[in-house]
Image 1: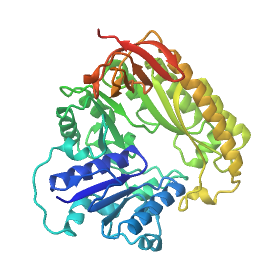
Image 2 (image 1 turned 120 degrees about the vertical axis):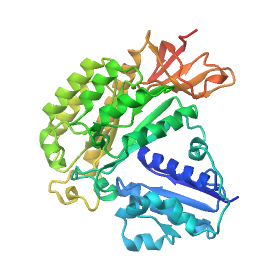
Image 3 (image 1 turned 135 degrees about the vertical axis):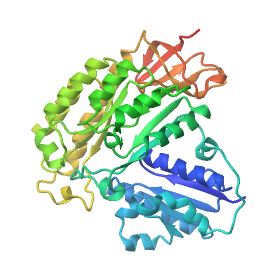
Length: 423
């Protein structure tokens, strides 16, 4: 039997796409093996969100060719769109799959192989090429039309396009039937999901109403359209995780304007006020960029003050990185790299303080962790709906992949400790 392995870089959307490729390969009779072991085919699914990410993807692709001269090497993902033709040619890949052909990646690979025996493999068996996966990723949307001045993603992924409402529900049912209790809804820009009159809020409600579903989680949601609606749904639908990650990027009006964002700081504050009012114990996350061209100390303070004002429990902080092909690269008043990193470090320190404070507020509450591992003594480790790590003293060996009730008795840093609350 022929084999295939995968190396997927970057976001959850990339992981969801890689999962789909794995399922198609499995259905074609090709076994999925871990990356790094001998395989007939290697698919490298790349990221280009930053120039550094692109370089790392292509470096590994080049090293794979040198180490595996007889393996069929396939390059896909965003770096295929961003890298120069000369750089791509230097990698000596057997197949480079551009965005326009991404849905046909598996047939294109099979065309390069002699005929293989076909047999049916279930979705989950095909998709679980990575071991210890306990959440299913449900891709519902791709592409973006915002064209923020720092971002290459719309060029790499193209115009917004959504899967049909019914197709999303059908795939979700397949995952549920295979025993997955948590589904993570992913997309390039989930706020742009649309199928006729049905948009993201309607899709989320429909997913939570599927028989047997444990809970639904959003990966991230661009602010400016549906974040308040989604928070309100959380108050009415317990199966929608009380976690919302917003790529707000900055809390300063001038910086947001130069970034090409479609809201200002006043809008952000109003949204955050309503979200916290709807869901007081929400796990609130954000993406933030420091040192964007033209950002002064006063402008950075506006961002820091915004973060300080709200109960954020999860921050992804990035010093601004020039991305060739984006307008911001040529903007005047570039901020020194050392200043970008120093400001990022300030926000990272604030993140740790706020995350630990959020964890401490959970003491005495009953939370619902999804168990990902269990030690020999029955102690389980997992993540709550609010996306906090936890240790369950009496989870039991049969609880892996299950959502339990846990009463929080203590915290250690950001980690919750307790015992099952359903006994």
